[in-house]
Image (cartoon, rainbow, N blue to C red; front, side, top):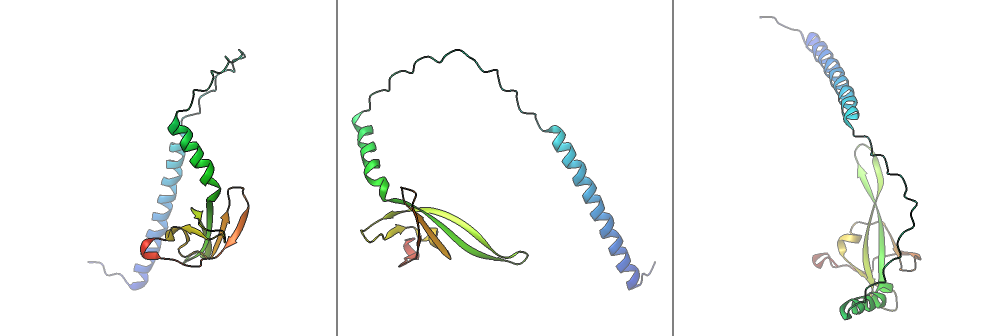
Length: 150
């Protein structure tokens, strides 16, 4: 039985690591080339037809339910807002970096209070609210009920 010294074991581990890493690198290189060669080329787009389009048919009449849905949407959509959040996440390798999220909410009073789900704003360091007219405002949390996700 061959007895190896600690120095020999260390050199064997280093050599095996280098050979293993090189083998993985070569395998990844050839796998990428093989996958790239198997990629299907995009289809050619057909020639553009210069014939004029036929006249569009008149729109179908809306029934009462559809008209009602449209009226409800037009009435409530100004009260729906978009909420953008920024949180700073700590990572062992990359340190702190910003993570963004978004959700929606509803304006519930004349003061501009917004009701949204707690998971939308949970852990956020910064909140920005965008209204239906695309104006944006910074926001702060004034209350929360995590048990009910509000």
